[in-house]
Length: 333
Image (cartoon, rainbow, N blue to C red; front, side, top):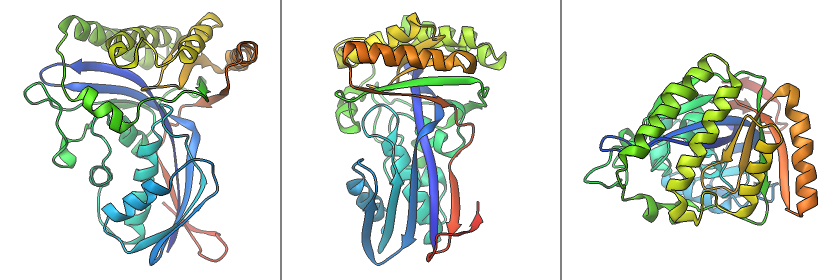
């Protein structure tokens, strides 16, 4: 049996709760249409990897097969999400492969069970929910114990999806990926985030932005107010994490890109996760104009950067069964 699975990146927009007694790191994010991962997986004895991209995936592929205790797999990666840039690539890679293998080997595991097995969701549940459902997502965060966020003991300890909503098709994100900077990876972030520091004033401000501004604006399809809420959230969350990344942003390239997007008409802008991915919210009528303005800025300043527009992906992963010989589609789920 052979399957093809497709999943896409996500933007992590920040937190509505960081350090309360009952919730730590309650996250906010959106799935986006691109960049995406396309992978073909087939039953095999031993591990065979054909990687048609420049993205390093081999180590994670081998780990997933080992964690699932399988005899092997033949894996062909046609497209991949850039690593360690703030787009959630590791979750999509591991979860996509785990889900595909669960179908091939008839392992009856839920997506959350698979996420636990492949060690995703220690802090954020946005990537898991983006894989499964897409759209705009709030997760329920982790439950701290004695002021500390510990390793999950099972899949029920992973952040649950608390709220999900479809985003209007004419709301686009302009994404800029500086090529000479990288964000923190999971090994670097873990010791920084284990111990939480309660800050009730910060929490009240986060709650106000998300509950009284961001969510009502999304329901009303008010892109202007939604964008303002994104920017306000970025400022607060960036200041909180400044002690870990030496400033409100991970690097000067990301900071300058965010400020330029806002200057040129983005309704809201920020840094995704640990960066360096910068994003700006814009409607479809003004999207090309904003993209061209940012491209001119990048050329003028000499920042090596990929810039692209994307819609929100209002659906989860897709999986198709394909014929082994000619890759013709025989069925889909």
